[in-house]
Image 1: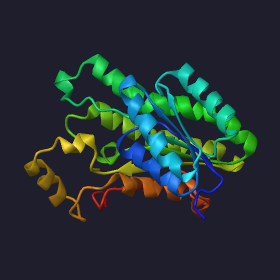
Image 2 (image 1 turned 135 degrees about the vertical axis):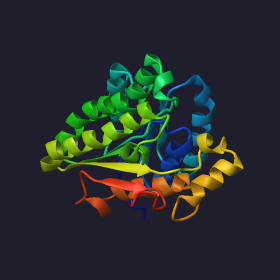
Image 3 (image 1 turned 120 degrees about the horizontal axis):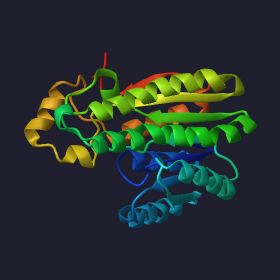
Length: 250
C-alpha cells in the first residue's frame, strides 16, 4: 500500500524539474494524478510522462493550462473534477524566474514573475476551496523558496513572490482549518534542476560549501516532503513552512 492510496492530486507545473519529481513520487505512492504544463514545447514531454508512469496502472492525465490566468484556473479545476471525481491535494508548484538587479528590472519582469509565482497560487486556491469545503477535507501545498525567507540579490521579484506565498498560506490555514483543509508551504533550497545545471563548477562548489549537507538537493527530496504533507501522516500540520534545503536555513 502507498501513502497516498485513494487520493487525487492536482500538481501545477508538473512536466519538468521539481514538478515532474512530485508527479512521479505521487504515482509511486498510489495517488491518481492530474498535472499541468503551460507551453506547447512541454506537450510532448507531458505525454511521455503519462505514458511512462501509466504502465503501473495509475490514473494520470496532463492538462495544458496557464495557472496565472484566473479563467483557465477555474476551467482546470472543473475539468479535473469531471475526470477524477474529486481533488484531495493541490500542489501550487508553477513558477518562473526573471533575475536581474532592481536598477535594471523592467515592469514586465516584475509582473511576469508575480503573476506566475504568486497570482497563480491565488487562482488555484480560490477555485479549489469550494470543492474542498464541500468534502470537508483537503491538503493544499504551496511551493515557495528559501529565497522568500532570506532574500537574494538580483531576485527581488522572485523573493517577493515566494515570500508572499508564505503569508498567503498562513492566512488560508487560519480561514479553512476548521473545515478540515490544511495549507502548508515547502521552501526548497538549491535543487538540481535545469536552472542549476547552467551553473559553472565553481559556482556549484560555492553553493555546496554554504550548505551544511554539502550537496544540492534533488527533485525527489522536495517530492518526498510533498508526499508527507499530502498524506494522512500530516493531518495535524497546517500553516507551516517546511524548508527542504540541506540545513541552509537555521
